[in-house]
Image (cartoon, rainbow, N blue to C red; front, side):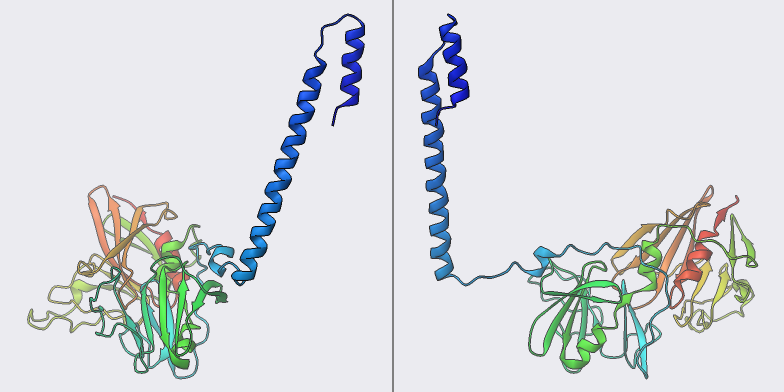
Length: 352
């Protein structure tokens, strides 16, 4: 179609003696018409192709993982665990905590298996036990998340979870925690619905500095000062009785929330996990496990790192505090009260 307004202006210019090219107007009009015809032809071809494919292939909506964004990996609020079913206890496995019948204390018991990261196609055995898939006897199998999660999306205690599988087997993928729960039967699925971030994950993911409550006790040890709740006993381990070197582990620490200082005069390698606590001056040996290092940037009075195994069944982690005279090592036990331990860590100051 010719632009009449433009043609009129060209004609006026021509009559006024200005140079013009009416052939160019027709050329542009023909090119526009040709482009429209090509566009209509392409649209018709796409429509016909869609109809043919629709008749051959059934419509399949995109998978949930393509429609739902992954949850952010923290920070996780330091809230108490929800109430576990009667007769159940909490089971701590790296970044995740689960309630199960007969569980509790972070010990490897109850119907849960924990497996170290396994390369695709590998047949390596697990850290605990030898089974590689959940069964009626061990209905929950905790592994590291592998690949992009798929399945229907649900929320469990504020966590975005992808549930897939059918029949007796279900997989619960938790991107925010980096774990996948393979379950078997109704019991396995019920255990999976109790999942929450472990206290270790809560502390490692924190970004804001908590306030140290007034009335807490200030303790000085070496190059450090820190504060602990008034109900925490402060135990100097050098005062423990001498133990024979052939009997390690007889002094089971952390029977209750306590602060331990220094090293014992004899052999004392036992560390329990039944209560929260901090041991400054000694760290547990975790060299046999893959370790995650998290710098606690919200501790403003010191350079503090938390080193913990994402694949161990416990709430124990290393603590490393850098001072002018070297690193001060410690052991921290996070069981049920991450809010208190975050405040203890936030109170650390280097004085040396």
